[in-house]
Image (cartoon, helix red, strand yellow):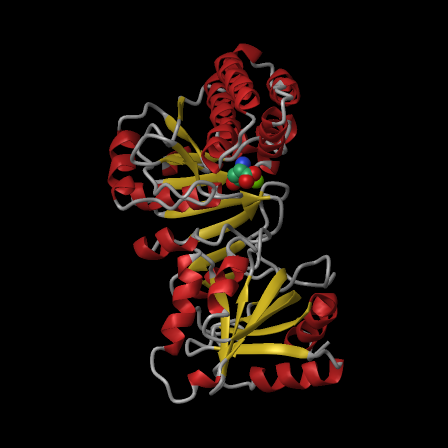
Length: 440
Ligand code: ASP
Ligand code: MG
């Protein structure tokens, strides 16, 4: 079996959707299972609609208009989504009466984009004589925890999904992004979560490969908006992809690699706008002869938390106290750098940070610095011959950027530096030049 995941842009208009149908037809022999996002822009419209409803302005008009536009262009009946739009309208009325919007209601609303989209895609495939059935992942067993807006699958999800998908007639067209907690409430896996659904489904059905169809030529050596001559990366390992995914939407949803890694399934990133381009394959082990560095990525909006305490000197358990404060407020820490009397951590979401810092002040002096950017040089070969680390530091010195923190761990897949946000682009460009353009 083959999982084919299509993102919002690939399902954004008639031309793209016709390409999708063609791609699916060409792969019928490999028994495809489709995983679909919402049509482009729909999730944003849903979230905006929910916010407006909670402020007393319930209106499904813009969402209905967008759905009808796509269906009409495909010559499909708009009645396909009547029920969903009616339910959505009732929910908006409810939100407007309560003037309240919880993460749980946000997920419930956001899920409608995928719900409606799979109905359209399955109907179109059937019209083109490809037997297909729309599958709502939450109803088909994708059980998650109850962390609304960023849920994770529970272990039983795989077995449940495998069992339901086995009975589906024709090509299953499965909703990405959504699941359901053990109490039956709808959850989502976070923005761009359909990538994650694709590998969850892939692991559930024991797929030979997961194809993730995007609107770019796979992964590039850097963001082309920063480095116009960045090149596509042909292959990379799970470890490299996991490091890179953290740096943003250009690659894949950060959790996507876990299910693939657990089941050893290769993930191929492909471009619907150029289906014959080779794309990027993400695989378990490093191909011989690969370049030491795969890509240079960056992430903005980072805060650095500097924690200084004399009590740290020669004490055991101080770090545990520090990490416990972050855990208590559900703050995810990324980079860590320590000395004998201080520890610096980086954090990329503001939620809970203030409360964690307040707790930390009971045991140490704390200051928060930012906005900063993290720039990462990612590649399984960094630690091998070739002195990549040396070139990186030489380039940093030459560019005159002030480095605020550095991390280079034991796995040697990722060398990260934190700098002021304003220096992000020139740091990426300088490091790209040093690592990839030495012979240019
Ligand atoms: N439709 C959802 C979003 O826009 C999920 C996805 O695209 O993967 O975030
Ligand atoms: Mg999307």
